[in-house]
Length: 409
Figure (tube, rainbow, N blue to C red):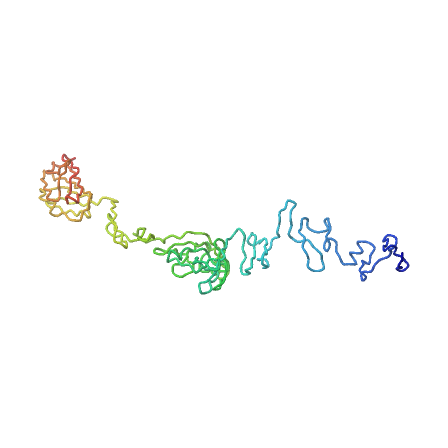
């Protein structure tokens, strides 16, 4: 077999015995290490143990650290991210908002939450502390950061939005505040729950509740709108500041704004809630409505009118529940003559009569009638008090005696 000499050494059968045939050192310039041991090799190559090489033991750095490629001359090095022996991933804390990169996530020590960056560099999501809705603006103009919006429809698979306003039921259903400025015909994000930052909240006090404005679309106010507008609490002012203000958005339900004094909440013919003004006397309430009026009879306290004596007592049944004669000094010639008012069917009237120490005759007249169980009082008993209870019968157009104390007390 042919042999080849390399400086006096023969390679037999195409092989070299490294232990017997190779001696000396191979220079770095020729692809070697220029050393005869590992420490010398690392020194000659500029490689630091545990920093530029993957080794076991404490010389490598933090226990459980995740390796990362350095991207320069280093093969790998320890990162600040660790994985415990039980599989728990631990991210290092970063303050100041971190550095944007789509898909990046870090532990945000400012907000004590995981912060996530998506493809939109203008926003950062604090996981577990806020909830976003991806939307599309086709309103015709840019919608600024922090504007209250409602959903108007759908476009390109995303809900479309416009500034909300509390003057109509449809536009009051606010889904949240924009968390960035969204140009027309562009997508963006709305915070349905959580903190919206970078706002001018200098006109509000920290801790104040903010409501959807009924005067200007998209704006907020600390004064809850009143009927016929709607009341929608958007959230609370977390930080009051001219440029770094914050509003904490919390879900709410739109309700009709509060009414004013002497108003009653009702349902209109179209099914919507409305406050209507109460009219009439304190004993009878008239509710004005689109289709007319609704009369509600209420008797919070008896309305009592009193005279000492009269032969023809003046009784207005619209303002009287009990009529009292305290010392009748002459016979009553007619209870009907000066009877006025517009009674309603079933209305009650009580007449209380006491004479002046002499029995007096009573003539009731055409407006009054006895019933089968009670007879109208014809004559008083000296110095006794008599009660005559009457009920109006609209079919008969009479005040019917339903009870009468003929003996007195």
